[in-house]
Length: 253
Image (cartoon, rainbow, N blue to C red; front, top):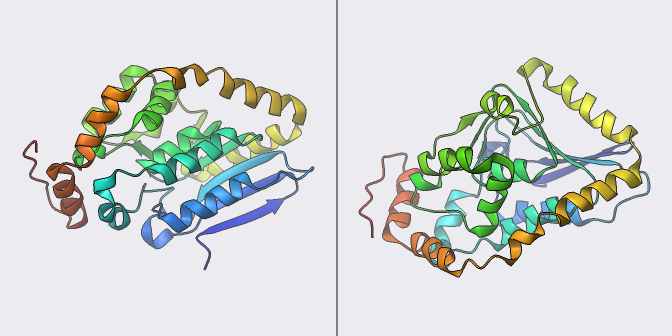
């Protein structure tokens, strides 16, 4: 069974992550299929892309088992390519977040142009709890969307934040009771689909281009710190502890 399901309904293309038994964890195959779906040629009738997750969780982030096998290399290229494909999609991209969006799942939601969330959903980056750290590419999106205060809370504490809090702070577009999520998502998607497509494409390109100045900032020094964390004994211990469902014992090595 495909790990990504694509549905078309008139001008709306919906991309479903389809690993409910793994909480839609992002393994290499799922990310490749997501990239293919996002980079596919845009049909003349296409107006909006919607990203969703099957099961009870939107997305739990990178697959722990797969990530542990490659932790020493710190290779995040797969998720970066996928998230950049979301960012560069010429159409508006809407994340419909019915359940938790954690780590890479949080990044996936926040890379979308609009987030429509259930009040039951939580958004988080638990990397500090497993001995890892986000690289420059991942952290800059958090700073862009959440701002410095909420980014620090999300990263340094590592506990997920409720969607109600993010919405109250104006950081996600919509947050509604779970039983109203489908109606609210349809309302947002239908509004986008009815707007002028050339205007939407121009606006999407503008918002991406105006933030590209960040890419010119030198960050070799922080890259070295991130890589040191990724390759540390603590990272190995943190990932092992999470898979074994126990508390990690960090030693700062």
